[in-house]
Image (cartoon, rainbow, N blue to C red; front, side, top):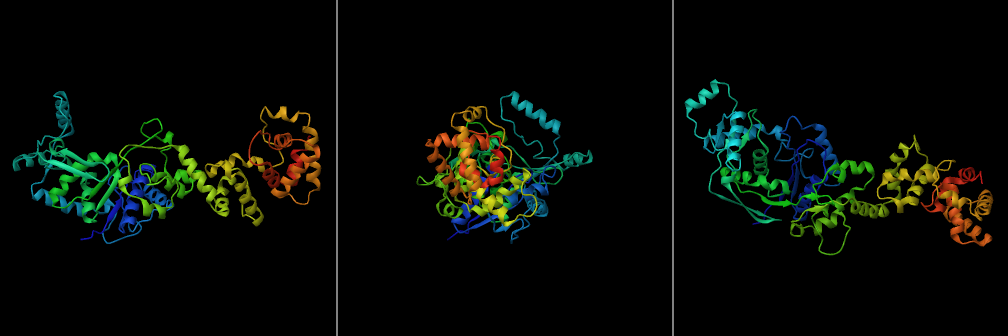
Length: 482
């Protein structure tokens, strides 16, 4: 009998979508798409203090930017909604009553002080701290006394002891837990809000989730979830736990290492197709030596069998390499549009663009494309191409400009620029070649003085692009003192 594959991405909206979350979403998405299934996005927003609508919208916007679309869930609807946990509290309440009635859960009145004292006692005995079931078999009189005293109560799940809980993980293989090490855990807090491990199980049951691909940090949650599935008489989904993402030094990722929000990468001018390509390689390896994949190609090739058990390494240099590749493949007009905000940050092209300005921006981006890892870097090069003032010169530049041939190179070049009818990049290339030929100098002895005089730098974008985009007036003003 065929199974309708249903995967889900269920983030807590307590902050923006980061790389680890994007990877989980991408893997779940690819499994659903490859197997002809359904991909769901829902919100685990029961942390009322930290959850926010802004974070939820950030997550959805980041997924859309990455072109990870969903079939059911927030903003898409579906037959299994609502898709926010805070809108499903009545449903959780029904399951809780059932567990209480069946004796598989019970009310606990232990205070924080009592729990802490027991925890310290267990540690002193060299035991792993866990709840020992003090309220598991309260009499009606004891419950009434606690209620009369105004004690807050939670609902705890009665964990069966002496059971082997087996997770047949699609990535890690068989992982076995002993139920005796769990302890009776809280499933509903004193304010009536279910905890993560409880709500997620009910959501997955009622939404018919078949596959759960998530980060390795959730593996320790799995035994609690398995005993809940057993108690409710429902089959657990198939799990796959993806390894951690570490920095290049082998430590847990931090913001300094690049663990920033997905939309921060968009703000810096990374392309979504590059980020998808990079993220999928954080743990998954293709069957061949290829490095670059479209989302459609990934849908065909992706499999959990090729997801590594060992931690993935986030290398920003690899990301920049991949993004530089996609920048070179991208449509020039698209890049010009994406580069415009960075140029406006520099005070350029404010207001409505003319056709001429749009062409200039397109040609400028193409001129510096080989130097870019991401589009925000156009700000580092725009000073080469605009304005009549030479940027601040490097110290070594003066040595070049005081060279024996420099004055005659600059004078002859100025003369030719003044009389040239065409200042396209190809025409400028011809002018520089003519100067080289007339003065019988090597290319270096011509290029270097001109670059130094026009840009104040020893290296940078191709000189003929700089001259063409600067225009006759700015070129002559920059060379006026020579």
